[in-house]
Each structure stands twice: as C-alpha cells, then as structure tokens.
Amino acid sequence: MRFHVLTLFPGLFESVLSYGVLGRAVEQGHLGLELTDIRDFSRDRHRTVDDRPFGGGPGMVMRPEVTAAAVDHARARMPAEAPVVYLSPQGETLDHQKVAELADLPGLTLLCGRYEGIDERALESRVDRELSIGDYVLSGGELAALVVIDAVSRLQPEVLGEPASAAEDSFVEGLLDCPHYTRPQDFEGRAVPEVLLSGDHGRIRQWRRQQALARTWERRPELLRERGLSGPERALLSE
Ligand code: ADE
Image (cartoon, rainbow, N blue to C red):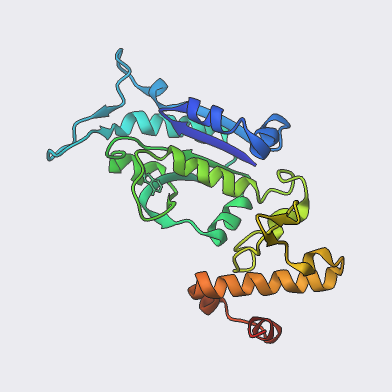
C-alpha cells in the first residue's frame, strides 16, 4: 500500500514513521511513503502558502492554487484508484469499518491543512473524501493523517509479523479486546487468571471471548446493541 502525504511538516512523518512495526514495513518496502512539502508549490519568493480570510476573522487560510498544485503533483504519481483525502474535523468520523475499507485501496493521498484550514475551492475541486479522527480540534491534519496511516497499515497482511494479530484486535468483530497478561505470575499480589495457565486452548479461547463480551457490555454497550449477540455469545455473557 502506498501513502503520499501533502504537508507543511514532512519531517514529522519521517520521524514518527521510522519507529516500530511501521518503520520496519517502510524500510522493507511493504509500505510506500512519499512526502511532499506543500510549500514547494508556492509561487512567490517568500514561499508563502497562506493568506488572510476574506470576510475577516482570526487566523490564516491556505491558498487554493498552492494546495491544488501540490495535490496535482501527488495525483500524477499515485494509482488512479487512490483517493485524495483531506483530514479535518468536518469530515466523516473514522471507525474500524472505514479503516478496513481504506485498507483495501492501492494507496491514499493524505492532504494536511494548517491554520484555519484550506480555501474551500481547492477542496471542492481536488479532494475526494474528508475524514475526521474524532470530535475535537487538532492544530493541523498531520497527527490525524498519522492515525490513518497507522490504523490502515496494520491491516496490511505484510505489516504485522503474525497474520493473526490484527484479526484479534479490538473492533474487528465489533468487540473490545480481552485483557492480556505476561510474567510474573504474581504482580503485587495480583494473580494471572488460572485458566490462562491451564494449557487448555479451548477453555482459553472461550474465556477470552467471554472477557471481550463482558468488557464491551460494561464499557461500550452501544457497540453490542449495534452488532447484536449470537445465542452462544448470549450464554457466555450471562455466565
Ligand atoms: N484536523 C484538525 N482536527 C482534526 C480532526 N479531529 N480530525 C482530522 N483532522 C483534523
């Protein structure tokens, strides 16, 4: 999968995406990462990218012709089926289902705004989709784009070492994750649940499922209402 990021701060992506599993995936070529500095498309000698808003008010707005030229540059280098996504609090809210949908695409061009945002005309003419990562305002689209890259990348089969690990994550089946334990067996008087030491993989699988159901019921009951419960799940939950 390929990502092309349009940003005023490419260094942010170079840094964050050099760590951990994503860093390895980029290094090994499983993820393509191209960074374009929107400022390179400014046409004046001061490399200006923004201007005051028509109608007055605080802050600055990113100029449409600079943004549009940066998007055109990315589009020419990305597969035709890779949409241009603008990160903003006005977009559709990201959830697991949307992440899974995006993960099936050959690539994504992620457009990051700063200041008060981008001139609406550039968004109308160049952007396919607008995505938000939640109902709060960040100081730019970069952290949101990193969230999208991380969530989408870990659904690529080559990115996480073990193919099973993404499949067992929270939300994959509409449930929160079960608790996890490692050594020591006793931590400050707290023991590891006995079933996990039993070696009985059938019982362990059943216990984990029951924990996931119970946690979802306690912490996010609306998820269970949306998803519904099978007969065996109903029985596990009432145990
Ligand atoms: N840019 C600023 N805030 C954002 C948010 N919540 N989601 C996506 N992009 C943003």
